[in-house]
Amino acid sequence: MTEDTPLTTDGGTDAEPSTDVALDPWGSSTISDYRKLFEQFGIEEFDESEVPTPHYLMRRGVIFGHREYGRVVEAMVNDDPFAALSGFMPTGDPHIGHKLVFDELIWHQEQGGDTYGLIADLEAHSARGMSWDEIDKHARDYILSLLALGFDAENGELYRQSDNRVLQDLAFELGSKTNFSEFEAIYGFGGETNVSHMQSVVTQMADILYPQLEQPKPTVIPVGPDQDPHVRFSRDVATRMRFFKVTEAFASFAADAEELPFIRAAYSALAEAADDDEQIRCEDAAEWLTAEENVDTATAAAESAADIVDAAAPDDAARKSAVGKLRAAGKEPLRPRVRFLDRNASEAAFDALVQAIPGEKRRYEEHIDSFELSAAAAEDLAREVELDHDGYGFYQPSSIYHRFMTGLTGGKMSSSVPASHISLLDDPEDGYDKVKSAATGGRATAEKQRELGGKPDECPVYELYAYLLAQDDDAFATEVYEECAGGERLCGGCKEQAAELMRAFLEDHQEKREEAAELLEDLDIDLDTDRRGLGGEEDEDAV
Image (cartoon, rainbow, N blue to C red; front, side):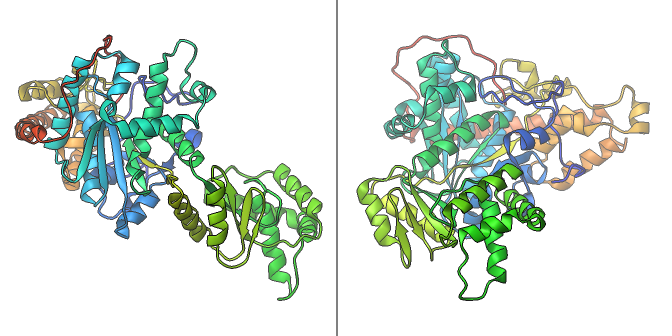
């Protein structure tokens, strides 16, 4: 969505803008400018027009960013398998901020995805010091609300980290591909960090990849942006677990990602000018890249390729290093090919891949070159051979990110500040009162409001309409926005309407929770843990 789309709300906070954004999965992250996430972390801007029947959170810009969500959308469109998973750390009551993730999971389930909801109880115990009795109580409340909102437990899976032995075995395997220096760099862990906290991170990597254990498939993780460190880490670990890396190549030597676009540009230009039977050699490409009249053309082609694959923009050093490698290769023919690099393959798997590659191919000690397969066909073949030899064949997980809800008192919505949020367990009258007492984006007087209009993009009450109360009715959300911005809607009446809608929502939700309690009895999930452990104070958590 563009910035001037009326339904888009910026989920603003009172935090002062800063040069860099710090994303802390266990802290109190606030974000004043979501565009910095695109620049600093490579999160891509979300475009709801590419999604069939997008959820209203997508249409209104509440879901603002993603990592490789197109793969999931493609699976939806083609009726191919895909999955969605998200977790809930049971450190307090579920509230309306958590409902965003509940709704995203349920929507993906309705689109045909295999859907997983997990209770991150190991994380709650290790990172927040919650007692197991507290965790049991809150876990029950999260699951009841998820069921009450429409999660189909018969066609989805609910589990606790502590009870899932398959998950724990996967976490052990993933741990062999991680090291402490990464925990330091990504999470700021140090000598004072307890080992169980570090173990819980590896368990979360396993959570994210768990839906692919029976069958590799595109998987989306709907979360707030503060959880992006977990997503990035899990994407890296998924790649490290693969037997083979499939990449592009043009000669027997290895070219890095920055050099390849220059080599590709040289090959394309020489191939276009060559006769049908003329062989292009590496030294020819080196000369082409060195010629002054070709430097700008090659750089432009390389920059275009970098944009397409979301890579770093090339520089002249990459061009010069490509020239050096091409000159060293001399008269070796320059031919496009797909390369299979051996990462973790057994000898049997490597031999099987050699046999499975059709057409012309060349085997080297640690890689195989195919001259006839497309990149997509090569990826499929590599995954097929890996699965046949007891590998996982993981796809890198995808993610979508929603904006933080502003607290009703302004600033961050937090479980540890009751007045800042509305719990899904609140008495409906208390929910009504909290909305009536909420901060707004209105002017100082009714006269100024009529003259200048309100500021819905800075208003926690408008967010309640956009994120929750308007539900699927975009026309109603637009009406509230435009009437406020145009000065026709005053804050008193707007809050009264929102408060009544909130009361009605809570009444309905809690009735459905009572109905869901009967379903819960039949689920294979233990909510009465027989565990010993040290409890601690609940820490503040971000939404």
